[in-house]
Image (cartoon, rainbow, N blue to C red; front, side, top):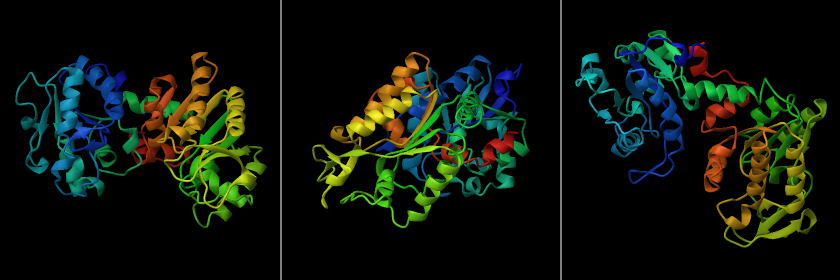
Length: 392
């Protein structure tokens, strides 16, 4: 896979740059800028190389229809302030657009095409649409790892019509994930949360042969507690998961991987309640399990202490209520403590994990934090991502 940073002459070259600027918007206001901050290095790099940048991205799921509330305009305005440079948003129909329309002022260095998912051809990976996009540029750069699990026109098919390169962020992401999948320093531990065990089973089964410890927390852990014969009260639980859990334990046994789950918990009568520590045999029918308990926290901290690599995907509890954020905060603090001494390599990913780390102002205290969501999980499941395959 060729990287754009290794190209010698990029001056005045028109670069079609695929980014993931799918940030959360509320009434036109960006509520989380993490994804915008992550693309600053590639923008800065190409500006310094005096390239002409044509940004392609999407927001939300307009399903091939123009939706004003999913315009890239607020993102353009946000990025303008960050790089202190004017950015033109081209709202003209892409099919009526010509290469000469893009940089009408020779001083312009960066333009945005409007939300690429306003065109149904994007998600269909349409050949003619890709060919038309390719006419705007000299080179294609994919710096959107988080979109690379999609076989979409501006991610996959486009590479058939332009010399194509990986961006800085995409390479960083893949290198970080290699360190938790193929270039591992053992002992390696994975902390995995979330509400549904069925959505993470592929990832868990792919990681078990490589990992020393899989620590299951959050809503997923309730399924395991129930499977083991414990009362879980009114806690969140996924139906028909017994065979999945049985499979996890059998696979782990075959590969000498330890599966760790809560030994004690924090409960409330509602999500807004105060926390009460309970042993597993003390749960009542009206209890909600909303965090891990102190014994479990200490056990996880001991495992992190003895690990050289850690992967974290999913908080330990309902961290939106500070009373049930203790488990997640303690896990984060332990990883950060070891990171600061260069004693661990840490990768975190997933929307809720990022929200938690943002809440703690700790995004930069991990070796790598992935904003990739589905692509992150599919890579960890061992799947081939169309966007990466297209660059190879």
